[in-house]
Structures are given as C-alpha cells and as structure tokens.
Image (cartoon, rainbow, N blue to C red; front, side, top):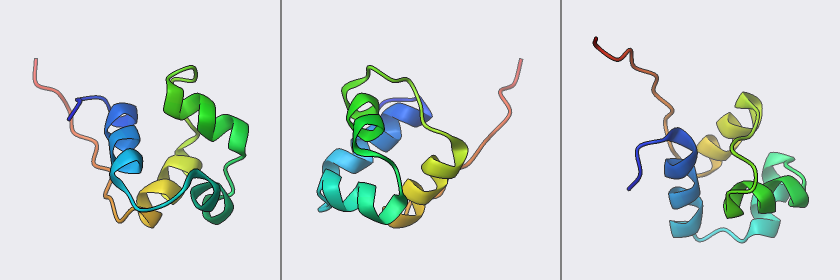
Length: 68
C-alpha cells in the first residue's frame, strides 16, 4: 500500500465491492472527478469528498505530525 493519503484511498476504492457509479451516487462526487482521481490525472479531492469516501469505505483518516 502506498504512503500518500490519495494513494491509500485509491487502493481502498479498488479493493472495495463498490462500483464507481455507486461510489459517485452515494458520495455526491461527479463521475468525471472520480475517474480523474482514480486514474491519477487529478491529485486529490476535497476534504468533504474524501471524508464521504472514507465513511462509505469504513476508513478512518488520521493526520499525524512528522518528526524532524
């Protein structure tokens, strides 16, 4: 699994049982944005969208301070 938040969410989406259609419908993310995010053409989604995806996929987003 990758280290970046967006890579981890992409990995979770790919591993989920949800179709992109259902993810978009249940989170309110438009299909074009989801497609660009999943293909890496778009580096990120809004925090609101990420939180909705995380909730649907039963993920917890944790922010930690790096030492140094």
